[in-house]
Image (cartoon, rainbow, N blue to C red):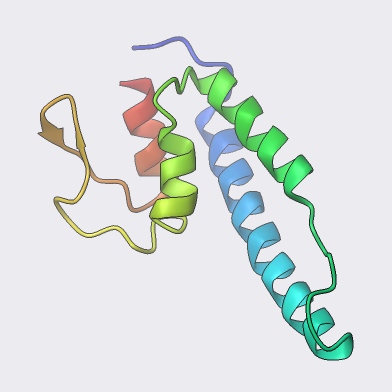
Amino acid sequence: MKKTILAKELFIETMEALEKQALHDEKCVGAMEVVFDGYCGYDNHWVTNQLIKLAQVAMGDKDSWIEYWIYELDFGKNYKEGCVMDKGEFVPLETSEDLYNMLVK
């Protein structure tokens, strides 16, 4: 098992907080685009990107699985059984717990 800095519970809470923030940002951008009739310049990617980087370093995620799970799999919502392979094996990657388990194996 790899040595990790983040406990499973803290990692899961962090991924859930990132998802909540992404959903909140999406709503805010949509509302501001209506109010300001187009792009409004709302952006907090600096904080989000840094938190993701911190999680990657803490978990030893050199292959960017956290970013993949967040952006490509949309926090696991786009996961389909058998769509993720790591080291020649299919791995579940639907939940933040699945992601944690894959990162610590």
